[in-house]
Image (cartoon, rainbow, N blue to C red):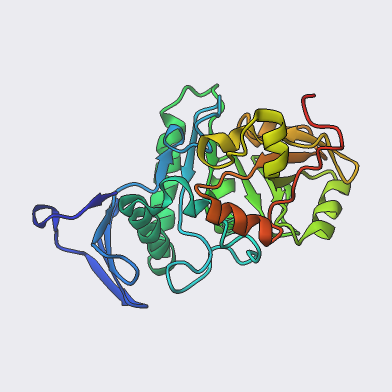
Length: 299
Ligand code: SF4
């Protein structure tokens, strides 16, 4: 992604004007998007981001790429998170670098292209996936997470089956979409504080469920002598050993969910950029508090 200057403006082979956006397809690898919720024209040269550029996938041992769209209904039309309810306000897309104009712009522009120039988008995605697979030795496992900030059933777009040499993984809030969706696609169901019944059904069926916990200020103060819980300090928050009788694993060590045991809870910590968003996640029940009177993971 880069911001357009006059020098880089080229003649479009196709222009689409819809929902307040103007999309110009310049060639098979390059498009521009402007209008709508964008304050400036954005050029999209690449859909997939390098895994090490994203804190979520940077910890993966396996080379990983990710596709970062703009979540839910955030571009003003369409919806890339049809099952999102209690997670929208606290979505990780709005934390970290999410509000940096270039990052925000790239995510919005890609999502607009997904909706308004779908054929172009999918063909480009296929090419980038092919090229990523070819860039690594044939016997090396490579990973792709297509729903960094979306919940799209990519298997329905033929993307997963077309690249059997790539190991895809995602999180989803669709209660009917979890586990081995395809031999090369593993999906972890995502708890949002209000879908506990569906989460337990997934666990009983042998699927995995991610839960985002926070540690209360008083518990942090008692253990660490400080109640700081945002930014870097958020990473020291605790995880329980069990949830509703199911084992919890530390999901913060890596984002690579392929090697997780099956039928377990993937414990994540509430990573809020500030206390306003932390308090919102707690108040909405999106993030349960760790009960420190019960066994803590790793202790
Ligand atoms: S479903 Fe996931 S990506 Fe979509 S709004 Fe909720 S947390 Fe964000």
